[in-house]
Length: 517
Image (cartoon, rainbow, N blue to C red):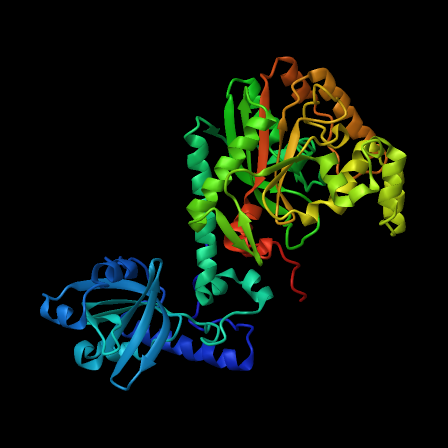
């Protein structure tokens, strides 16, 4: 039990600037006066009976005269003070709750002694107000307060009203202030929530089962990426934060859950940028007795429906472009997309010649370390690198890039007509990858060779490779039905649907470099 014998009411020093320190102390004194008047400045238990949006919806069509003639309707609301205009013995206060904002009118004549308590309120405080609805002379719907209750004292001031919170660094580090100061930010995350709910309903309606699989893996698996490492003390083993849930979800398909999905976090120990956060949300789903072509149809239907559900239209404004999520997305093999991008520089014959592709790639590769990496690439890796360099950034509207090289698709099924490519696609929108999908490799012998290839790539110095998963091979040897699977980056889709330039704008608490002491 903590020692309470020597506890005092003296507040600890707070690290603030001189002006803020003065405000902080003034608010502490006001909080003490609330307490002296019988109100706990950090209490609990108040339950408002109404919300701002409810009041506006019920009375939005009524004029000042109609409200005055109608029997008075009394409402009880609670929220944060976000604006306040005082006039000596009266004040207009704007309260914000989870549904919106409502103006309340405080008058000494109506509140009596309680008005003195109200005068101790500041921007940022939480209060409760009860009273009938009316319209002011300017026509604003308001409550004429007959009862007032202080709820929570805000000791620190909010950002200045007219300047708001514009410092991007502070917005990400102190998201709570960002949400208070910038109402549009809340709408961004409401849209993100709507996106996730739509996806769940879409898949549930098609008999998919939502599951949860491990977040800590004994092997690096599921995707080619660098992992975060942790340690389990009791078992004395190293574990890896999951890169992707793929191999666990496909084990479930082997076990008979033929349509399965998971929406959860993945972790990749990579750089941070406007498109990458080391911790991100992924939808991954698998469907037995389906091919990658079936998933293109499903993805197009799901995301076009999501666009309309979230934004109200299948045409979405994003960073100066109008993205068309309506049906009929372009589908093009990777090799053909590269040839289109470079014009006549590469022929069909050139695309099958590693030396020719290496020469083409080296023409635009100047850093010595990158040139050495190009020299060690096999044919499939060269094709993938050329696509990233010439094509990916130029794609604007939703486009399926198909038939990836087998060398860069260690878990995808080989194409029956050409074993050097796979039955795989990635979806690109606005110059970035949104989804990755393929007909699953269910041949355990081929999968063994692919895993071995990943080990050889690691020996050549590649850092983004997968481990050999013996238990997954064992699962395939028990038999996995013909299956197709896909992963979709929820954060990146949310960026598109909210016109967000950075992935940090759609993640409530993105990873940031720690502030220096």
